[in-house]
Image (cartoon, rainbow, N blue to C red; front, top):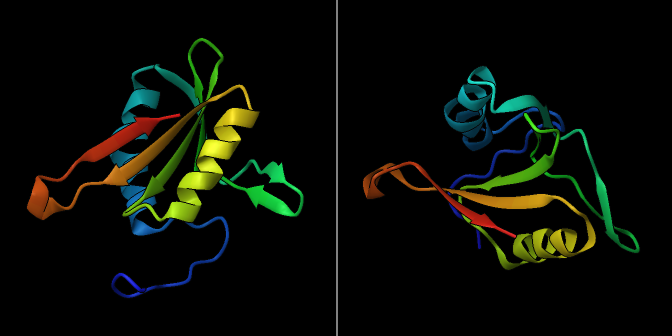
Length: 113
């Protein structure tokens, strides 16, 4: 079932939700020195035979650790399964981020795996 209008984007280009998350949440922490680097769609994880997962953002914290951030306007079951499987396989903090609609107060809801 479609949720609103679907617009295909080219690989490597952020959608509006991803761009907003980067501007509101990631860039300020980069400028504050909490993060050393932010990569968009630069890493791909093999989570099963013939199944790959490319997260929206991989972030390097000031202490050198890596975090994986996946941003959605809403979460479908298949996307949750992929991030859970990846979190079980790889030694990084995985963060599922959901945009909260403006009519519900706006902002971001984060869930760690």
